[in-house]
Amino acid sequence: MKHFTLGYIAHSPQIHSRYLGYSLQRLHGEFEVIHTTDEKFPANNYNDMLERCSTEFLILTHQDVSFPPDMLTAIQRTIDFAPDFGVLGMVGADAGGTHRWSTLAGVYEVDTLDCCFIVVKAATAARFDNVRFGEFHLYVEDYCAQMNRVHGKYNYTIHIDSGELPDAIHADSFPLVKLLHHSATVSQRGYCWGRYPEFRLALDAKWPGIKTT
Image (cartoon, rainbow, N blue to C red; front, side, top):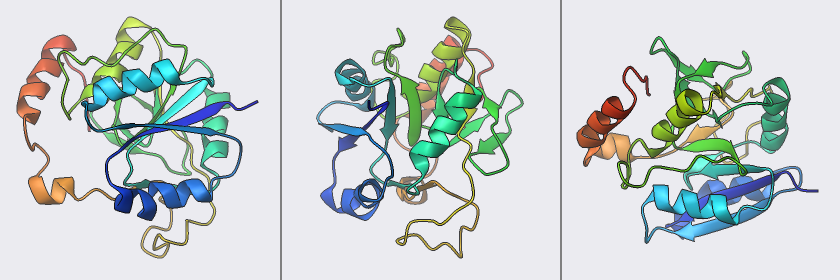
């Protein structure tokens, strides 16, 4: 029986082939794949995929993310450690504002996780807020806050063990990093591109004191 569905928003065949598609071809274990188009904003698409998911866990990832063949094993190991989790992810911010990355050092409890790669439970009652966060920023951070502050669940980084990186990644440059986000958005537009300041104010108003990456 499959436990995992991997969902993504399809917007660039070239990026998919280079990163996510390459990783999926080499991913060990049983899993399903679903995708949507980018005709709607991410919060809407992620809600759609939650409805369509037929497995216990839904992995939501950007197309410009790459990961090693043992990624499902790493996720399962983290679930075994924290079966009552809210959200698992690649990188997050803890209650003190420190950024915590998925590494072989262990599992970190965090307030919120970055949107590039997360794991959620398909049967959860929570949904992504497509009213306050209907465009491209902070919809995952809001979802993490829902899980923690409304549903009483804790969010964690994924415990990534040692091993070989995919051939397409320069392992000598990233010897301990096991899941990589290759986006050029920040370098091209800056951290607060688009309507980010507006959504940041909305997040602070909805969840006072929330920490984000």
